[in-house]
Image (cartoon, rainbow, N blue to C red; front, side):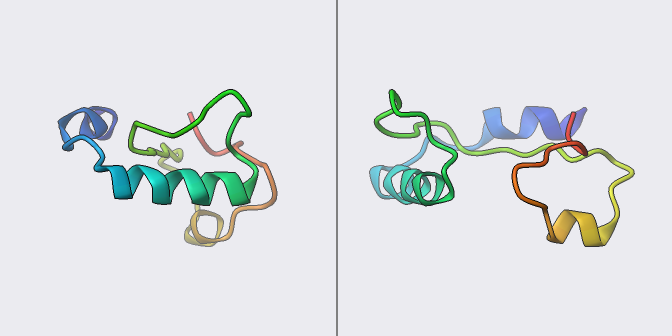
Length: 67
């Protein structure tokens, strides 16, 4: 529950950070065409029972371990 609050207490993205995150999401195919730039810090919420191997190695486009 505490981890879900974490992104809101982080500082806003700088322009350089926003551009870098947008580039990474674009190359990974995770950005929508109508989104010019990502302005919020990315946050992933894996399930607490996820194995270490699953946390490090994510299969293509699977998000079954996230809430």
